Length: 79
Figure (cartoon, rainbow, N blue to C red):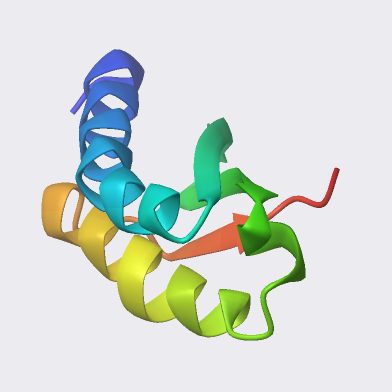
């Protein structure tokens, strides 16, 4: 899978999870993908939410891995 295909699939995964984040006043954007690690940035209410790490692992990471199984982990890059 090319870098462009990986990026497109990760963006597709983020578009799937985004409505759930937006319903709570948050959002997410892709920062980078490097060696199986996806760096994202949480926005809005997601930044200060006390369960954002659970959302990141159980929601975002799981959804991304559904589209790109070889992704190892997803990391939130603070603003």
